[in-house]
Image (cartoon, rainbow, N blue to C red; front, side, top):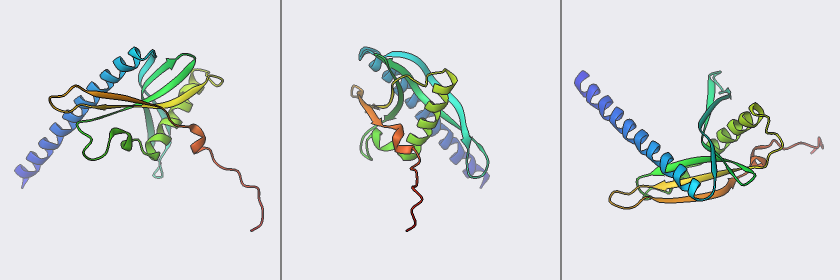
Length: 158
């Protein structure tokens, strides 16, 4: 039984390492792509504590790329896939991920005193299929921070 568990855990480690290498390659390709598109990279892999989860454990948020396009600060999530067979890379940027990046961007702007700067959230999708040139696309303004603002109640009686 121990041998079986050892084999499974080793296979799992190799899969994680493979996906980690794929993700790193995707981020490198995305950075090169956005530079060609006219962006200026400010920072990569920004990490910051953004709060605690329901069990009291600290949650850390990460933003893959932070760049300027003109006067607009862009918080960029990079999603890399080997194929689009099970949904494209954009489908992986769900509401939970968007909220985490939004909270991390808020920390970044507060930390560097950028309350007044124009900003947006972009997603760069990278598809690296075996034997083919990587396909890279950018979705500018994929979501807005307003999506996560709490609505105010007008205290009306129902």
